[in-house]
Structure formats: structure tokens, C-alpha cells
Amino acid sequence: MSTRELVALTRVAPATYDAARIREAVRETARQLGWTGGTAGESAFSRLIPAGARVLVKPNLVLHRNHGPWGIEPLFTNAAIIQAVVEELLATGASQVIVGDAPLQECDFDQLVHNSGMDRWAPALAARDPRFHGPRDYRRTKTQFDGGLRIEREGLLPVDRFVLFDLAGESLLEPISRDGDFRVTQYPPAELARTHAPGRHQFLVARDIIEADVVINLPKLKTHKKAGVTNALKNLIGINGNKEFLPHHRLGGSANGGDCYPGGDPVKRALEFVYDRANSTRSIMARRMLRVGTRALHRMLHAQGDELGVEGSWSGNDTIWRTCLDLNRILLYGKADASIADTRQRTVVHLVDAVVAGHGDGPLRAEPLPLGLLLAGENAAAVDLVGARLLGYAPERIPIVAHAFDRFRWPLTDFAPGDVRVSGAFGDGPAAERIHADFGDTKMHWPAGWRDAVADSPASASA
Image (cartoon, rainbow, N blue to C red; front, side, top):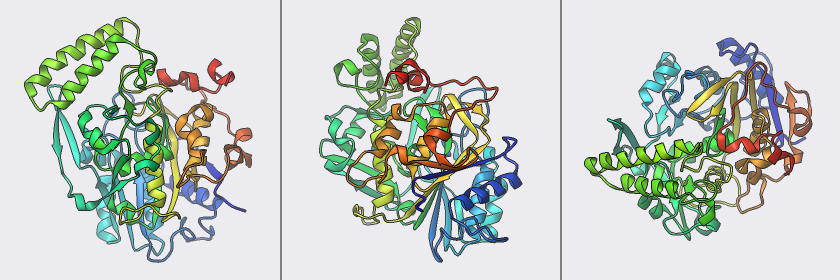
């Protein structure tokens, strides 16, 4: 029986990152999917990793600190899971194992490695086994904030460490492309116009990832204010090295062809205008002056009771899912010469940290949601469908999940949402029948713009 529609779930009780419990949960999850024979001493990935394979482990290492008061547990993939996976991989015949990600530009990567605890085991493991490399930072641009102003450091990695793909007219962004409309927070719009325009849709992907034979995707399950949920599909935005290749939303409100916010609002349109000027100038003085304007406009929106802002943080965002699914297609079908094959070029599997998931105004102000689960599968869309249900969403109302089952060139699925099955913690059977959100004593919070995607919301019930 095929496992491509199967999502395996394993309970980790209590919901803590005890190394021994995590190691056993990884092995049990792998056993359910047939990645291991399960005999004593056998690696969790013994049947998944061919001898000599180059393996890339892609965790979620988004930021070194939580923007809210809740700590790092719900923020990024826990180091205990990364360590367990790496050590199990090194017990196979893999020729190399790399851990790498491209975090948010403002992330202090060294601080993240320290805060996560990776610095307590990764250097020693690399010294003991030369096949292990990492963690690696794949960002070509980093930023820091001086007096609230964004200062960029660019071109930090040589371009030959990346592969430049152009999906052109086959990009999922093509149907919504208009010159100069794409935006990403805190970045010059002219840079996005250079990489994404009608007939041109470029992505800059770390060469380590494209040259890997096997990719182990290790997302953290969280709510996400722009995509609804971040899980297996959204996590792959971190394979791209420069932010100007990543459209997140489109200029304007839905009333005038954009998707930054619903309807139309003159205050928001003015705020977008000021942001564009601030993001486009290199003058520190000009940025300081423009920052006064953005603060005044934000105060006006706050007085109006606005919760959504101008960054595409709502369920009508029709851009971010397209960017993420394009990157998933590149990961599956992309070749090192920047061409896209008609057949899959590498094995990609997904193992999700939902021991302590994240809810609320994620991904950067994530509140802890102790689900006590690992979930895994061989198809990102299937894994995300289950993850969305675990967060209390109706998956069909989350565009990144719903559209992952669409039919397009270089597809992500060859089955329907109703075919997704689960095994393990919730029993065996169809995901739609088995997976029901259970938040225990936690009062669940969703991003303001995604409350209409919650499974028991009026909008969902009428869909």
C-alpha cells in the first residue's frame, strides 16, 4: 500500500523535549511510514537513505527570539528533534548530512544556535563525524535595527552557492502578475519587480539543497498571520537565499486589485506609499523622517480598531501561497543546472515538531500550544492538511493547503484531500474522520485575519 497519502502521528507525553522521548518518538513515527525496519540498533531512516546519499535537513529556524513574551519553545524547531534526526541519519550510509536554513533577515543566527541549544552538541558531533555539516545560514542579506531603522548587510554569501531558477509563465504567480505590484515587508519594491514580473518569476535556492539526494523537512507547526498556517509547505520558503525573490502580497486592498488588506482604505493606501518610500531610500535621514509618518498613520489605524495592517495578514492574501508552492515545486523537480525536470529529482519527507506548537499572532509572536505530537509524511500537502486540522482550521479555507492539491505542471500531489489517511495517535483511517482539534486547557488564539478559516466559524460552516 502506498504511503504518499499517509500522515503518521506519535504522542510525546508529557509535551516536553526530553531527549530520550524525542528519539523514541522519531523512531516510532519512522516505523509507521516504513522508513525503518524497526529492529534493534537500526536507524530510523535505514530504508529511506541510500548508501552514499547527500542529505539536507531543513528545520524552521526563523528568529532567535519571540516577539511576544512566551519564550522560544513555540518559535522554531526544537534542537532535540534536530539532534535526534541528525544522529539517526548518521547511523545510515549517508555520505553527508547538512543542517541549513535561511532565517528572517533580522535573525541573529549565532544567538539562535545558542538559544536553541544546538551549540551544545553540533560542534562536537561535527568533530566526531566529518560527514556532518551545520547548522548553516543560507541568507545572502542580513539586517539589524539601529534606533528602529533597518540597516542592511547584503551579498554575504557568494552567488555560486545558489541556483537561480526562473519558472517564467509556469509560475503560480503568473496569473496575478502586474508590473511593480508585488511586495514583501521592509524591502524595496523595485527589487521584487526585477525578479517577479509578467513572464519572469525567479527564485534563488541554496545549492546545498538542490544538490541533495534526500531532504528531511523539519517544520514547526504554527499559525501564521499571512499564510494561515506554517508547516511543511510554508517552511520551504527558507530554501531561498534573498528576500527580493519572495513575493508575500500585492500592493493595495482587494477593492483595487491588491491583497494587502480587504476592501479599500485611504489611510492604509497612504501607509503603503510611505513604506515604499522608506524601503526604497538609502538615506538614514530620509528614513527617520518617513518613520514619523508611518507612526502617525499607524496611530490612526489603531484608533479605527484595525487589526490587519498592510502586510497581507488575512485570508484574502492570494500571493504568499503561490510563492511557497513554487518553491515546493522547485525542491521536488529542480536540477542543479537551474532547469526543471518532468520527474522528481530527490526524495523529500516531512517530520513536524508539534510537541509544543505555536498559536496566536504567529509566526513571530507565537504562543505555546502543547499538542505533544510528532507528525510526518512523504507529501507536504497531506501533512499540512492534518496540521491545519490540529490547529482548528478548515483546511479547504487555507489557500496554501487547498491549492497544494490543484493540478498544474510539476504537481505536488496525485491524490485528493479526501484520500489523506492517518495512523498512530488518533487511530488509523481517513484524516477527515480521525483528526479533530483538541487544545486541552489552552484557550486557542488565531491571527485576526484568519478567524474566518477556523473550522467552527460561521464563514467556514457556510463554505
